[in-house]
Length: 271
Length: 261
Image (cartoon, rainbow over all chains, first blue to last red; front, top):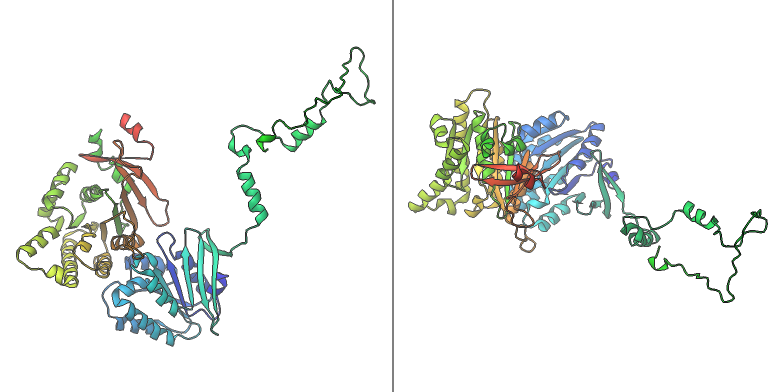
């Protein structure tokens, strides 16, 4: 499950979250923030986009230290800042990697992150947010960043699925697809369920049921069917034990060649 | 009926937008053949009626156009410039002068052009900040940002420029940015630049206004659709009808009822 990989101990070194406008990375970030707060880890948020003061005001109340990278600075200065903020049990969030790439180029960003990754020790973590809809050639950048990451997460809001790749320290790689939903602001994932064939067939039958096509009632409930079956028509012979009624009586004699129509007249309705 | 549209409190468009100084970044997106210029002119009207300051960067229309529209809506843009409540960076005029002087630096060195533009904005907003009282708010309005792409400026520089504008020294500045996107399909695997630009604004905006044409085609009763989105809130969709002196908005399906009033 994705939640297990997000909350491993020691933490996964580099988590890459690939989001889009329709489903932003915030629910996953909130999950990670809560997890690190519980463990008393230091969270540093490197802001490259938007209004720094407004974001800082929101995040400071959540006990997250913000660092302003919205004004011009060189990649060397950024690398130096990253190193000074990287202390034992610290987590650095880069929001967003696209802005970093636009500032320093893909090559520069990759090299800087690659050098930085070599220095990361157990207990430290980097979280990078990559907005996939801000890149002309998203696949190329995505592949480069996935190569660096230990856990790469991609959200697809169209089908509510999350695709992730987790690289174990030993070298094993897990690729999974899970369903996700946001429940009360919480990011919840669950394994894809194999559909039950019988249920699918039954659903399909129910779909074409005339009951669903009409605005009036066609079928009978079990009680109504029972009531119909228990009704004895007056012209049919009754049980011998039944008390005879004084007066006139109808005797119905079936023809030798039966004229009784046993076919259901509503058979063609497929009820 | 249209007389009602000129009052600030009764203006249905401004009442629907509900712009507040807390909205630090406002993105106004026009889709396809729709024209979102009326949103900008209405927001300027609100800025002046609240006695707030304006730094206006124009790429889309001439200053004369904004003056005429302003007069129709009930404000005097050049008068506000004279009184020191507004400053205008007329980029159309600047580019025209550069071409006349055979100075093509703005296409040859786009990085320097964008940096100079930002320095100008920074300087003008500082002048406005120095002249205002503590309570006043300043708005930087850019109409429209997509024309930077037309000048051949790369998306990297434009995104950098947006970030700088959103983080000006004076923290009482809000930024209103107009941009337009085409409805054409993406070219192969590459995402069109106008979409990237628009998306980058949508990620950071506190208020995202989208003006688009009707999906069903043309209509005499409805000019188009306005979509208002704020992060964490439900999106509001309104239909609008554009008149010479104002805009009337109504909920989808209510257009006929409004016209009969």
